[in-house]
Image 1 (cartoon, rainbow, N blue to C red):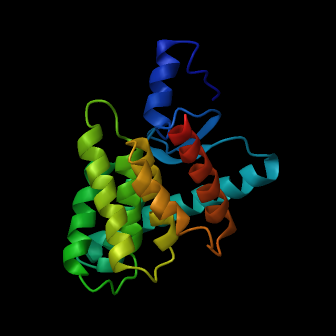
Image 2 (cartoon, one colour):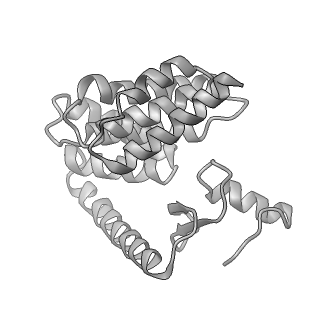
Length: 212
């Protein structure tokens, strides 16, 4: 189904429900049979890229349904709970995801699952991208806390530099430009070319704002 958020209130509401909060278009939303969001993709994708993303989404949904069966048999299994929490939070379902994430933090304080950094990263992303004029201070504070947790406790994790980038972006959105700059400069020698490039672009934009 193709919708134009500017064409009607109904379409605009659908975009608010299934968009990622950035306001960017085009946005592609995958939903389940009940209309619940599975994943959101921002920006144009050619047919080959779209097919890969769609296949990944279908695999995630299959895994999610399997996890929901497994959790009934092993309700306190840290790995199962962690995977479910991450999927819920990634889908924007914080009401279901946050309690399970909190449960995992208690079940797995030593990060034996290896997924605590991912939980914190995704919680941070949720709060950062869902901040609005009514909850901005609270949501940005929560986002900062989760990103900082990854940076301070899980420096060897695969999402360490992602947490740095998104924390700097969260700072920038609040006009905490100096804190953002200091963090972005640490990514100038990142081995992840995408993060390095994105950090460079954001750094240039912030410096432009300051100069103006």
